[in-house]
Amino acid sequence: MLAAHPEVCGSLVKETCYFLPIRYGGRIGPIQDYERQFQHCGRHAYLMESTPGYFYGGKEIAEAIKETLGSVRVVVVLREPVSRAFSFFRFQKAMLNLPEGMSFTEYVTACGSFELQDLRLQENNAYFGLEGGNYGKYLQDWVGIYGQELKIVFFEDLANAPQDSLGELLDWLGLDNCVDEELTRSSENVTVAVRWRQFQRFALTMNRHYESFFRRHPGVKWVLRRAYYSINGDKKIEEFPEETRRQLIEYYRASNRQARSVLSSQGYDNVPEWLSEV
Image (tube, rainbow, N blue to C red; front, side):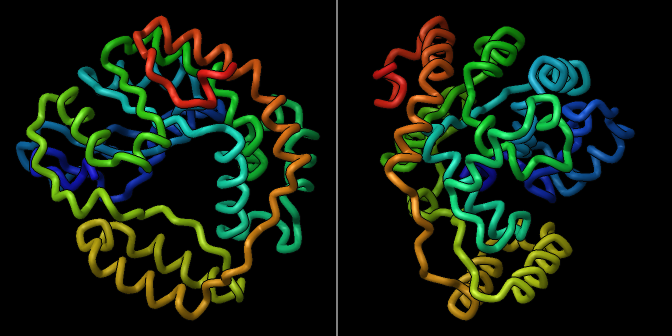
């Protein structure tokens, strides 16, 4: 939605992952590699990319972004962590990174078997679904470095009142609220189960290869995506056992409490129910 604003230019690839090597103990490449992601941009007020994995790089990535780019605004979207874990599980399945028959309960057990130092290895990212909801562990580093240059958006607000959430965000950026209201009613990152994994593997390859084209022509991607899932989409619903849900609610309680404390210190008093009940 932000990238559709006339004063915002989105990167050629949505998740550039330019700073991501720092999360795994590596180094970023030449700045020219990053600049090429914005070679199509003109005199926009903001250049924008979206790599959620940066958040878990903590202080190291937060500092590197500021030192490399200078004046930066950061937007973090927080989702109720139990729902986020389930969504991450479904996404990793759709990306063919998990065994086809793995249940969500089995996935949670598998995630819990990893030590934190093992989850910091990139090859284990598919099992970061449980740890990824521990927002309290990572939030303070970003708040400490960016302060008022960081904006927290709650997924629930974005889903229930997208136009209001976008308007508030544009006000914070100092931009006119001139994004087409129809755009805020659509969802781009919807995870769908698939029937045939080989067909999905081919589709993922094509999407990666032509992503910059699809970013410039979102209508084309929308038509192709709809046609593809009419053929390879599977309407089966992954089971989410109530006992697993209760276990995860308890698991995230301490982290939610920590996140609520950090957010309160920054003036975020109107928080979703999952944060207000910690």
